[in-house]
Length: 287
Image 1 (tube, helix red, strand yellow):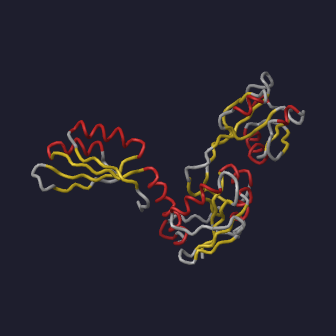
Image 2 (cartoon, rainbow, N blue to C red; image 1 turned 90 degrees about the horizontal axis):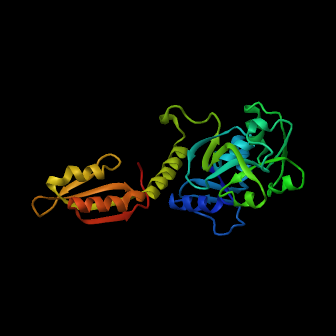
Image 3 (cartoon, rainbow, N blue to C red; image 1 turned 135 degrees about the vertical axis):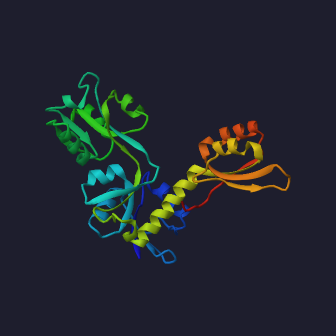
């Protein structure tokens, strides 16, 4: 049975649960439930603190897990990223009072406060900067006001909280993070034929959800003489399905198109003379 670590709270928990549900897995009904056995899919879910997931997976106690890239890298555990999940995106950056420093190279002798001490220490070392790092849990922007540090490193979305605290973002981003699937380092098979079949099945399901979220199925009718122009607009993942219609000279086309481009493509197809243009959502797929 495949043993999977899932976030039990925080910004990762609900999106991860929704994605697993779309992939066909059972989900817990009670948030106090720490272990869920999905017998039909031969999976056992363990609901853990997001920060602890990489530790359990890296130690080999659990097979795979869902966590944030930032939490994975900060943990220093023997785990590696094997699939990006496309949610919980964030940027990790430095901030300080205006005039304190303009770049990470100027942090020498200063103290940096952060909730991700592992990431910051490695980043400073990579830039040959000798600075102290203080680990705090949450609300690190107050560290400068209280004199604990001259610089902070934190997750930045809009930057409003930092500006309200009188701070400015400096230097290049330390890290771009998002939710990822992880497994113990070194266990990913170089030859897909030797991949653990249970892990491979899980990854196919999750990849299927990602594709289903990004694409819609588009159907339309078009005159045969305009088919090549229409297919150029809707090439699909491999090739569209084309079927003759009862009315001579017309064909029906079915193809997958990116959701964000669907309305523009519909307009362009209509201009070409296509009619009965329809889009339908994709709930599951295997590519």
